[in-house]
Length: 184
Image 1 (cartoon, rainbow, N blue to C red):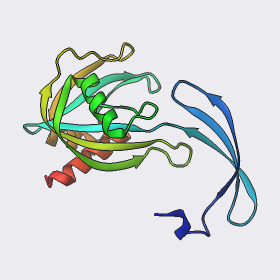
Image 2: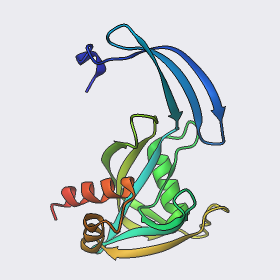
Image 3: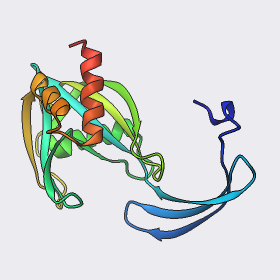
Image 4: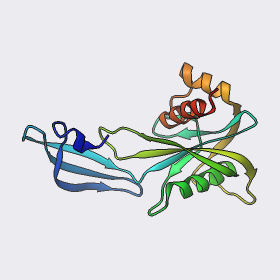
């Protein structure tokens, strides 16, 4: 939906100040004009974007199990990663699939995108389906990433998504979009 279709709801940026900048993220404070003419502050975490890949073959979905420090627990997720500066999302998806799983895919299909938390971050995750998988020779994971590759039947992953065993938003979106695409 274009914001110009809803002018009675649209906020207009007045000023922007970066209050913190890290390796991947920036936090900015924005003064905005509200639709009624008053002003407010919006704190926004600016993110370069990311991808998640629903790679599957022979009825099995390729997943990664990893420890997520922010949650203090191990999660089961679709392979995913952050876009580097100037990198097209399609290139990020190919790179991340190889880095996290040691696989390449001959066939790719876009599954749309999701906004992680539109109330406070610009992060958009583009979802992809990858098929016709093959092993990549000589792949290495990022030095600060420790992942376990898991192949599970798509029906089992869907059940885990529905019963709450999988709670990662990008994985839920990717699994449900893949399920709808396959008409399963």
